[in-house]
Image 1 (cartoon, rainbow, N blue to C red):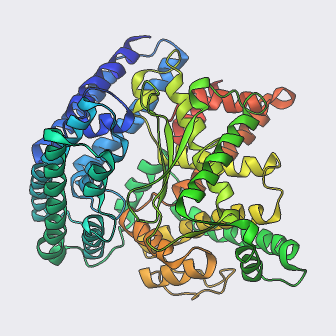
Image 2: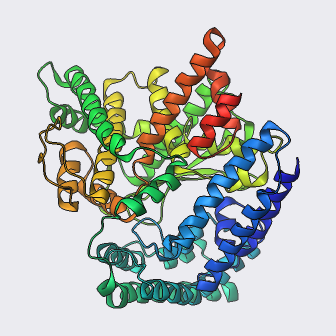
Length: 556
């Protein structure tokens, strides 16, 4: 390890002290009884650490190729993080998927619960929840006074989430957590007191969003080109031509839907439509699982099977990564996500499903590809392999570097790879994969179109409102026409796009860049190209922006 790695490792230690919530999330021990300081001073302190680190990084020249890649990755990530802070995005962002509130709520899902010390840490955090939210209110008030505030619609939607999280007949997240522990005595009393305080604080925060912030929220949800360009670069780690990508989205969606029609004919007959094939699959009892626990068990079995099949054949999966846990999330927001292992792998990587309220029947044909996306060869392999490679990657690379375009692009590439390897030969499962890909292509169109308020092409292949300009209402109409997702989940998806500009396209655009990187490697290596070796070398670089990824791969 050289000077760049030393700096990176020092940064992680300093960052963990300033971000206890983040430390728990990435599995760094010793910070589980505290939260981040969400006051303006807390945000400023974390930004100052980033600023100092970048300044020092500029003075160190890399000696090895590994150091060069690490330096480029840090400069790209930390530079964009600082840009987001300096433009006010970091402190003011409130959406249905991300905010200071979401960070401190979700950290409880990742905390250890066994043993007296672990439960004392839970109690400490529960009892700090209210004061941390008070600090966060100060930050949001100052941001709003400076003209940096989220849209009114997003603020109201997050207030609704607060209502659901604390509803005794809904998610009941804090009391539900404590009830599951079953702790008695003085520690049990402290946990229950903390749950009550956190519940009250969350309910009150929802009222704060409604009554105080929402009246001043932006009327438009569109980010505009300047904000969107920064967001897109942040989520991709690459600069792209937004107008070309928007046009490509239409072409890609049309291609996918043509493939879906071909598969639909295999499922339901030569003249069958896609919707008729979907109806046939949904009516097939062999493809339906009833009950959340049974569905979780099905996901676990499929995830374990994928690890067993792929290890030693198409990938060399490290021993620590051959374990994954499939979980039902404690909230019902309708999202599916992955959380990485702790640094020591005592907490394994986990695949989470935040099942919408009332949903009890699950169609397996839709979710086979989801398991590959979240598990192996998707996120679990990518993130787990990075965490294992201590001999190749510094601590910042292993724990803190995450780029949505790299990670989500890889996971979408992994879905397509499983098709190439023959794991989606069943027409129903293949239709599920194509439908998921179509959703990701549709949101390239919708996300860029809505946030830039672009004109819908007059010659678009779907004859969809030609010549009109995108609005959230047209976004909803387009998604419902092209995505076979239950309305309650699709509504969350649209709200997520509107509140988190630039993130949704990172899946499909990231996959596009990964596929191009593979083709570039084939062209460079010629007859010496080996797919398994390409995957190993690419993943051994760790997570990094897609522009630095392409440069690093070209140097291998």
